[in-house]
Length: 81
Image: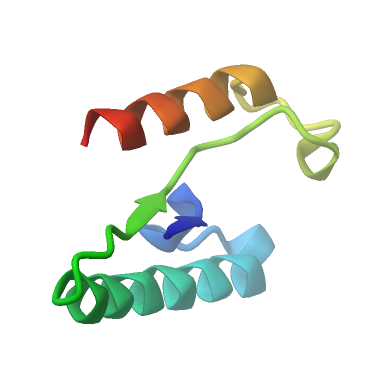
């Protein structure tokens, strides 16, 4: 199981407070799933990327990773585990 969460799960960003709170909740739920599903041999991963160059971040001056690079990093990380 793979949940795409966000770096916002670790630190609240006031300009997207609701988004940050929802990502923190998803991260917590993923950790609970990890504990429960690992007993059955099911792998659970949380992918927490930083800013990715998507429409959501359009107009931002943050340094961003391309969608392709984020995808490759996530898949590589999961496969290496």
